[in-house]
Image (cartoon, rainbow, N blue to C red; front, side, top):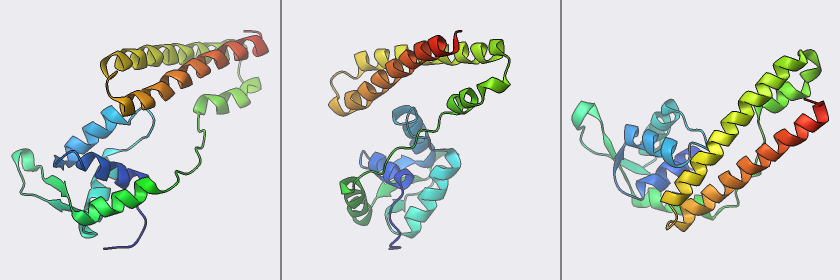
Length: 172
């Protein structure tokens, strides 16, 4: 096995494979549904990581099925690598919010254009909060899903509070 440490994308794929064999496409869909709101994984990343993990012996590919899709299964080495990864201390988060960059240079925009952007983003966050709250009603019995959704709900409420502060500060 290649001794490079697992990256978060590869580790998340191994985590999903603990639930059973999945094709690359199944993993793309699962990642989008389960972690896509807070961790971005592209289709190309999934397939690149699957190839690397197969070479490293972390997963095994099965026989091609319908539409030439190949199911992947976790190996013992993959379980060990995931166990090591999940035990490590997560790194620090890095806020990368494009709207903040625009607001930082907001003096270069007509006030009505900046206000329209803020209104648009506020509406998107209100919609996301409502979606998280609906998801919470569905996943209420899964405490791990709820812990993640709790973060999303608190985050969206904080961002909505920030929009109120920006409105007051910028007089819009």
